[in-house]
Length: 414
Image (cartoon, rainbow, N blue to C red; front, top):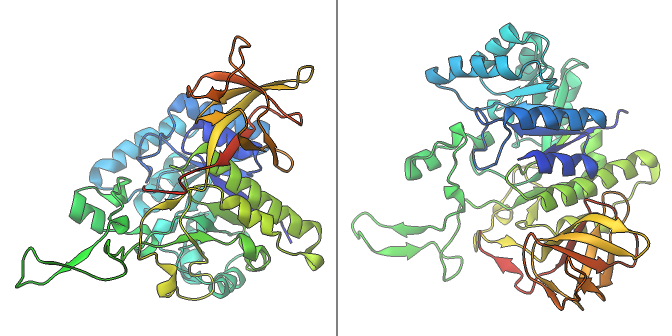
């Protein structure tokens, strides 16, 4: 059985680097056009070149997302854009539209095409059809069970790869085909500019009583009737692998570097643990505890075990759960003094209990006993974001190690 690919989101160049350092096999990125995540920083052409070189030097792959639903004006613009990027060494382009598919086959016949989840792929005949047209991979819709995925795997050609989301935010609309944002905010989600009205709170107004708002009661603040919990399948790795998926995809191009690194590392450990000893595989509860330390909503298994019911929605709040915050990033370490060079992100104190999350190996926790500024002056508090500080660590630490601590306020608004 071939080990599935772990595919991570990369909203910018730094997130791409962290994804590979923490265990990703591949990343998906967006350029400055044609990507469904305008809220992400996305990649300039030069950043794309640098990211591809970084990935390939580590045996990784980079897939370019171009999965908007295009209008006439977009087709020629995409052709021009494709001519600019096709020789950079991209490993695949992710598309949802048949017209853009044909343009890609004509202008870049050697570039792999992955068919986006936006194309609503939910049956084996569609998957076969895309493969017959030249697609290398089909990204399945989120609205599918493990049993359905397994059936598709059995009924399509062996050389067709299947990919599915295993972690991250869930869209209330079918495979992300949302009209709410365009209608309510004038922002087209199918062009990458979603306003996320599914996360807003709603009341009911009766036609003959304008201005009289009646809550659809969940609590006194109203109800969030479209607000899905986040997908999380880390406790079901053996079943995901048995389904025949070629690639496990993590959502989150607009999430932080800390989010990408933490979630990727947990799934990396789970996948590797299974393949080390499939017969005696057991779920390590630490994997779930780790991914609970990033910003998230309550977790659900989505459609994997059948259609979700009422318990898969969060009707009470659209807030994220943020129990931990990232307070610094290690940029260097002096083994003679035992001091780590750190770029501070959020405030922490001498005497704080912090955790060090390393690219390789288990995190460790310690109390900050020594803390200094750039000039070696002792500090009681690090409270200048982006400044450089030095702190004593009880173990050697590598660059790109995250430092996190428990937040005092555990839940914050979006």
